[in-house]
Length: 141
Length: 141
Image (cartoon, rainbow over all chains, first blue to last red; front, side):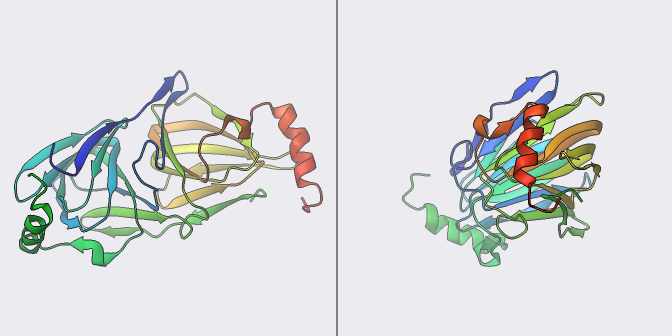
């Protein structure tokens, strides 16, 4: 997968009472969760995201329906389909992301390592590309 | 509402890109979130929960569909319908809870103040009732 991203498989407790997935900070999730957010009621044709973060780490889980995530650096890109509540997509710093193809009332849950900070966002792709080339220089990608 | 419970209204950022609700620890949520879990794939007729906690604090949000929560102490009981992702149900210590009437592929998201600890559970209602009477004595309920 793309640098600074990976898929995490979570344990699921399933029985006749239903299914339960538990995510503990610094255990199942590789950071302390300071912020949890969820995105829903997104039109199927809508594309959102279009940013990277300087420092923020996130884990994305599609807890209902399905959504596709484009992950991109200046060097590579990949599309991940999230449609399984037992699967988390870790996205670390300096990875460009776009979310699209929102199906069946998709609900995307995101756990984040920091509070919201507008200064941590890079929203212009050209600016991102310059910063990412510097950031990843020497990292072997 | 029942002692140690309340409904929290969250801000929702809605626009043509969809809806987003963000929950920051110790801000929107009255504790540090150490554990996040979600319950799904529950049969409509299934009833689950049937326990109280000694110390744990939780906020429950139905992020898809709807579910009813029975909250109960030895002194009172109440049923709350959760069907709105902008509404959180805070449930503090020593409140008995049961979840039922799971509708439309309900997904119940729960933010919890501590890691899982089986010793914090009270799963026998008779035992709970004795402990809760002691716990709430002098609290004015």
